[in-house]
Length: 477
Ligand code: 5AD
Ligand code: SF4
Image (cartoon, rainbow, N blue to C red; front, top):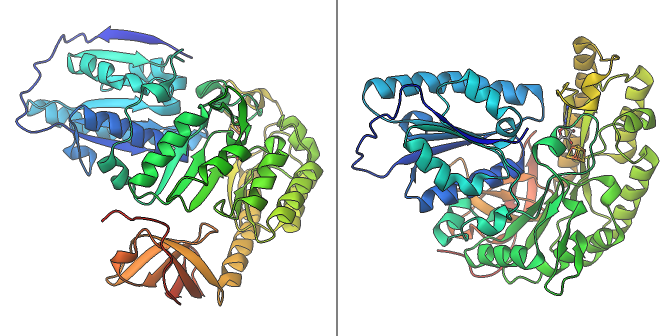
């Protein structure tokens, strides 16, 4: 699945049009937060290459689709977007104008060669492990070559990426992502990630600390540590010792200006004692844990190669709740994994009732080529998957609404992130990831404000300020 080659266009090298303005890029991100982070980092590279950013693909000289391969529908969206882009490109070319189309992310990694063969409009394919090589790939693409780089390079991509610049950080806002771990060695039998993102890798502690401190100096107050399997983090510290995610969190909480830390996504088998202790000991670690279980049936969990049982998961939840009683929980669920019986599905509903979730993501099983689940003969009918998903989501929805309703009347700290939809309104997030809208001046952006919640809508809360703001540090003006 990994290749690095260059194809010379049949039509030869096109005349590069002379632009009397900076080139403009448009990056569209699909899928998970790690892709959002990668898109931001690709944007950092493009900014250094002199690109401005366009608000739409039509206005761009370079369109990068940062793709997701996790479920069928995710990659279908990319191919339909490519159809639209091909039309823009043809119009531009007829006007003597250049438009490059690049495919990045996990579809690029898994199907890069195929995309190049099927879609002649694509100029560039770059995998998630090699996008630090974008400047060189772009130069070659602008020279009229069609380039693919889906290598898993030996060099550390993160060390090769440009240092985070202050204007680019400010463009991210007060809450930022930092990837600390990539890849996965778990090989759940439904999942493409170990194939598209490769083996587990943890960034060294010093690199992560430097990134977080740089973000904090430019006004970031909340950092979400990202990894496909983030709690498997085992980065090397300055003394050459292995550092767990729990210890890394303790260390980052000391960074001046960082008021909130989160991490996602975790695997139950990697919830170790240091991480659970961090939930007790580190106030900056927000009381919200996304811990996917996928199914409540041990039979299905074994078939999924999840390496934990439902009881083990419930024990972890109990320990985390002991460590931080107010913690709210979220999870991922898959319905209709091959062989899932009605009783298996009922076990998932029972687990959901036993835990009580504040939020969750739920999906119909999607057969991914190359994964063991796809080979199974006992695939479940689409209509049955749909019916189960609707039942599961009804229950999860009820729990989310109940959780939001319980917040009404309480005062919670809200990190103000931006202006609200209406004039005079500002918006931010509660410790539990809920979107909160309230009346207040824009100067509060970047501050943590105690807010009394007065009403709950399905996807957000309405609140009012109750007292003085406590600043988390120097905010950017
Ligand atoms: N089908 C459906 N959902 C999937 N996920 C991963 N692979 C598949 C698949 N083949 C879901 C899991 C995972 C989340 C990121 O996406 O729930 O936790
Ligand atoms: Fe995929 Fe997560 Fe399983 Fe890894 S742990 S294989 S990323 S679902």
